[in-house]
Length: 340
Image (tube, rainbow, N blue to C red):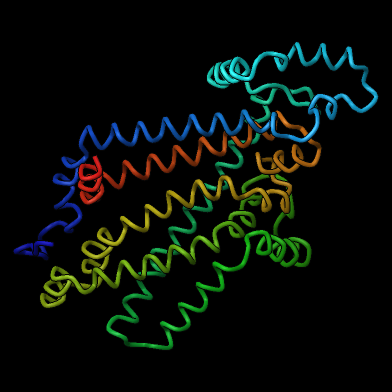
């Protein structure tokens, strides 16, 4: 990394490199990741389609009950197109998905698209808030831990930091949720224990979802900060005795964010798909609650749609992270060119 001639007046090194990095986001790099995204999406469609056909037994028999006459089952199978050939069924399935038709719930008779529309925004809102809280807590904590333990000093702080963040990562989110409900909702009565009744309803589930990710990101942020603290531009900045705010916020912070924000993007998709148990603890009206209901009640169209939607979210977030890395880190596009 080149050192600015006047670091106290110069922008952060990350800002200086932004123009060069953007130019490295080549059409070949974009095309390669678009093709990879399309292939992954095709595989996801095939897997979600195969779900109904791999279920032991006859899903229609389970839907209509063991006493349903064969004529009724055959009629329903014809209405759903399940008596067509498998390739034709797959083509119809792909057509329906891209037209927004995800089928009908076996249990409620409600369009699955409407079920997804009702639940997914609440799940995304919960996961997004948890990701933001995790980042806002983790980045300062990781930087503080690195500054305190730089060059092997404050061994007790380093040991405590590693032990506490490691323990926080190891505990499942649903255990945090149970403890928070017992303490702050049932015992103290400070916050609502379940449902979505207002802004206060977000507090406990967001905390439960953000503790583990915050600890994980803090560990990454500490490692990235330690690496940057040993760089030439930071040594020069310290030699010039810059104020702590300018030193750490203007020069150090931007250079520690690439890996941290990348993990934050991946955690967002992970929290969207992994909030199922927390949503059930808090009876949160999101897609996670409907997922458990669909599985326990054998509502296969809903379960199939949830798998498809969650998978598409993960693929989209991963694609976005790859493109962001290509813009922020020239090594990504260099690697892509070499692989091509």
